[in-house]
Image 1 (cartoon, rainbow, N blue to C red):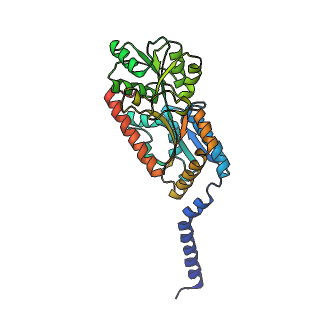
Image 2: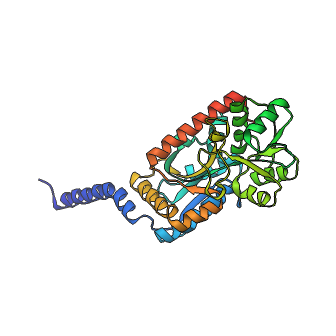
Image 3: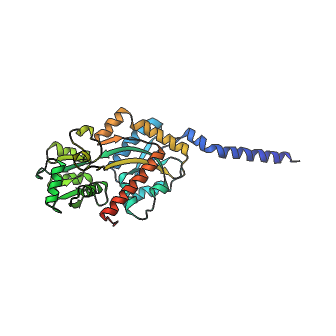
Length: 327
């Protein structure tokens, strides 16, 4: 027969066990109860940072807690990944990743923080196409004429990018592969710099993001030939896609998404997913994203996981095909 003290001990143990099982649900129900930190592995002012700040501001209003953008630039985004991967898996420290991170994953045989193993996908947030532009001195008016010119002068045309292994670099390499042409790659520090180089005649063509290209297009310092995604862009509806301009199957674009540390409860992932879906798909946010050359695009955590896996695989194929090596 148990003593009263033993019964009390057993009762306390039972309450403790129930509390332990209830914690995840209770945490999810009260989430978020404090500020959320969005870590960006790149410098302030870049496209990943700009997208993060736009989403963070709206998300803060939506969830009733501050959403802070924390720039941890360095080592091709690895410092930001490390910060998030080693944080408690409670949904309060998140990683804003970009299409460039999927290239880094594909480029290096081993990375300090594997995107597919070290993180829990939350959702895609936005996508943005690039635009193929040429200096006005280049005697072409469309992509077919550009391809013909490149074939008549193999290895003579130069194109600018935002750096070796960047999304813009691979946009140029994909055109070379699909159109069977030879061009010389000239890396710059940013997409805006590559647009500036094309406008100044330092290179014949480039693939900048739309915000970086627009000021030069409006002053006729560069000419837009095509956008790199599969769909035309609303603000440049008269500019065709590369796919419809004689380069079938060409599809290259930038994108931004949200990851949490691996082990974050599914209930919290679902809440974060719902919050991002709610804020990026409203009319004023869509307008604000469009100004940046972006389109809101969200999906489920499972869909985003598959999306990342496919992006890494496609990048790996292209990297192998062009013989690009990590420096």
